[in-house]
Image (cartoon, rainbow, N blue to C red; front, side):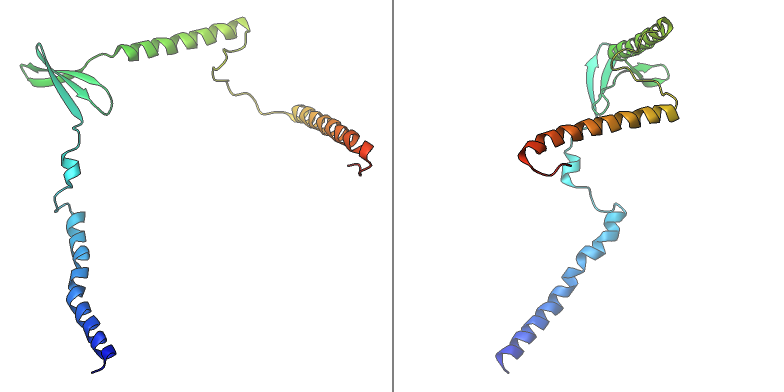
Length: 160
């Protein structure tokens, strides 16, 4: 037997032994898809969504994803959690109401809307608006071209 034949037999034997090992990931795929395998250790050690703090009459529940706080207490019907009113929500609602009122008063007085306020949609431009815009663009172009021509003329280069 030559060396190359021995090498081929060795490679074939390795392939025969290792080929079933290569199929293990494909055999485990259905189990993973069905959730039969345990979750990763990082999922088990992750921070829980809710945090609880004991208070008089129950416990405060903090939702770490939304920031909402609820007061959980025992009632005759069982434990219930009621959302604690957030002062920030009340302030934001009042600010939005006041902005709308200011905009209404400005429109009634004929004043322009506040800077940064959303501009109400206007009608589509008509033909005279478009003619005006094209005339402005043409004047701008001719003036710019004239300035460039004036700068090039003294040196004897071609005019645009």
